[in-house]
Image: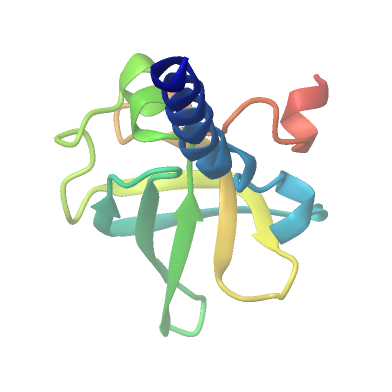
Length: 137
C-alpha cells in the first residue's frame, strides 16, 4: 500500500511539473496590441530558436537613414519547422518583410504574423490559439 501511495504522489508531482510551464504561456492580448499593426522591410541580424517562442531580430532603416532594431516574436521552433522555416532559412543579412502587431508598451517588439522571404514566399509566423487577430479569421 505504501508503494502505491508513493507512485500516486510521484505521478501527481510529475503531472504538475509538466502542466506548470504550459500554463505560463501568455495570450496575445497580454503583450501585443491588435490595433497597432506593423509592416516593414528589414535585415535579419539574428534569430533565436528558443521555447516557447522563437525570436527574429531585424534592423529596419528609417526614412531619415537611422536604423532601429526590432524583435519579432514567432511561434515555437517546432511550429516554424513544420511551416518550412529552418535555422538556415534566415541567415544574418537576409532582407525580409515582416507583418504583425506591435507590443502594447510601444517598444520595438512585435508579434509576427507573416514573413516574406526575398524569393517572395510568405510564411505564417504566428502561434494559433493565442487570441491574436489572425486566430479569428
